Amino acid sequence: MKIFSTASDLSLALAADRASGRSIGFVPTMGALHQGHAALVRQSAADRAITVASIFVNPTQFNEGADLAAYPRTPEADTELLRECGCTYLYLPTVEDVYPGGMEVNPVAHLEFGSFTTRMEGSSRPGHFAGVVQVVSRLLDIVRPEVLYLGQKDYQQVAVVRRMVELLRLDVDVVAVPTVREPDGLAMSSRNRRLSTEERRAAGKINHHLAVVAAGLRAGWPARELERLALKGMREQPLLAPEYVEVVDGDTLQPYQDGEPVRELVVATAVRVGDVRLIDNRIALRANP
Ligand SMILES: Nc1ncnc2c1ncn2[C@@H]1O[C@H](COP(=O)(O)OP(=O)(O)OP(=O)(O)O)[C@@H](O)[C@H]1O
Ligand SMILES: CC(C)(CO)[C@@H](O)C(=O)[O-]
Ligand code: BAL
Image (cartoon, rainbow, N blue to C red; front, top):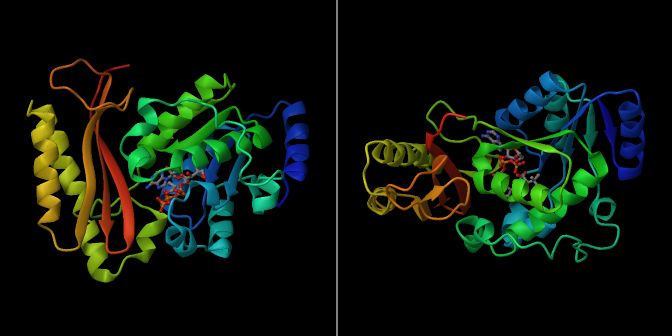
């Protein structure tokens, strides 16, 4: 695995690969890697000749300074894991390399995302998706992959990035990789390592509450009632402070209205566990393709 710290060197290496007909998969990350990230890299390495991973803790998508300051960083272990998973190139840039004109320059700030960014993470983390779109568009411009691999754990992020690709008419496929979970069902997340033992135990219950909502939806229970029961159930657990539980149409991210036909029905949540904010979701129903 070759490590690049500048966009220009990486672009040069990729241009040579492209010229010899090699296809490129891209896995953007913020580091502190775990088996969820490994699944993305392994999938790309199985599908594509070249897999590029990036590790960049993007300051523009953090709406809380404390969250950015506490974000875990484990570069040595990350490099080792990427090597083992078959990553070809690692892009490990500075803020200046990603944003040569300064962080405030956002060439995609004009894009309108409507219902994709108004709810859930969009309303809980003001400015978050503007930063995600800013960095992903810049990274795509550098790497120019055929396929972009993202995790389903960040369900809304996948929908927003797909919309960005559509709006900018970018020639890239977005593949969503299923969420990798711990044995007790907790979605793997870099922030999990900030949990105390008690918080970690409590966090394991989040998935259970989502699974109950998903089962209720399949049995035809009203969505708003299931959301209310899940919020109440989580609030009764010591250490869990849910911000939202929302049952949404996976294509529009608008609240699901009971009985309406949808291609994908999803329940998503954000939960504070002590100082740590975690997100998770479950797909309750999916139409056959
Ligand atoms: N458990 C998981 N299963 C599959 N993909 C995942 C998982 N966790 C993260 N990813 C995906 O890995 C990519 C990089 O995510 P990121 O580096 O932010 O890690 P994270 O674990 O989501 O961290 P955070 O603590 O910020 O939520 C994203 O596309 C994300 O959806
Ligand atoms: C896609 C991403 C790498 C952009 O910084 C980030 O939001 C993440 O890790 O999910
Ligand atoms: N995986 C989402 C990145 C973030 O929390 O900012």
